[in-house]
Amino acid sequence: MARTLDVDLLRSFAVVAETAALSRAAERVGRSQAALSMQMKRLEELVGRPLLTRTGRGVLLTVQGERLLVHARRILASHDDALAEFSGGTLSGSLRFGCPDDYAQAFLPTLLRGFAQHHPAAAIEVVCAATPRLEGRLERGGLDLALVSVPIAAERAILRREELVWVLPKGGTVTRPDPLPLALGDPDTLDHRAALAALDGAGRAYRIAYASGSLSGLLAVVRSGQAVAVLTRSAVPPDLRIQGRGSGLPSLPRIGLTLRLDERHASPLTRAFAAHLRTVLPAL
Image (cartoon, rainbow, N blue to C red):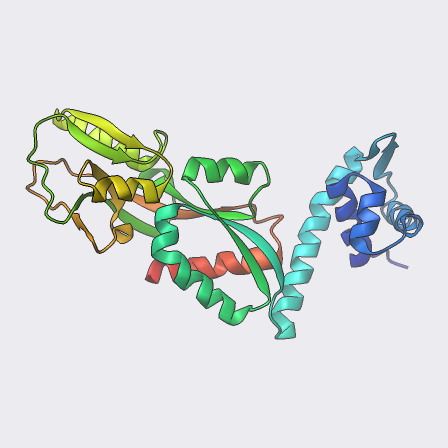
């Protein structure tokens, strides 16, 4: 008789690998620790290889276990996707989504509202931060997916292109004595680097009046008339003014928006939300 890999066994195995402890994994899958141990023994018999090494602190995957985990995650993802597609039902669960502040203000209400109409039982936790912080959290496993800013030339999978613009309060002017006061994002963000590169290239003197990852703080400084900001055009509030060409300020580059996620290990809910973003965001 041909051997088959049971989905329940693979799902339990994936949880054991994630928790590194049979006791914690048993709680997650709703089985006794003895029953879970029997499942792992059965899986090892099916593949004919030892998959786990017991230690005083829990369990570790063997080399064969690491190899099987790659296949298990792929099989489980395909299995869950097929069920979601053909069941006609909606997805439930939770995911953690990272989004820069300016994009959250411009796009997030529409994106979340549209997804909730199709999957009302899904819970989306939104983390707003600058792109470098989001990418760091994604690498550490603190996010399931993130929308991030990238240079146009550095990325192929661009979902949307955004123009960086100089922003002033209505009635404000840049015809003021040098150096030009700036309100910018964190020093490692694209808007900060683009502003300084453009001004340096034009030989325009400047000073940093405000640099922070807080969009609300940045906007408050600009509204006070104390500094000029750089934002994406879609994120400019209606009470502020975009400084047009001919103002004496240098032109700024366009940047791209793209998604970061681990497609191989993403849950069906995460992949569904990513597909939603890829469909809706370019049209907003």
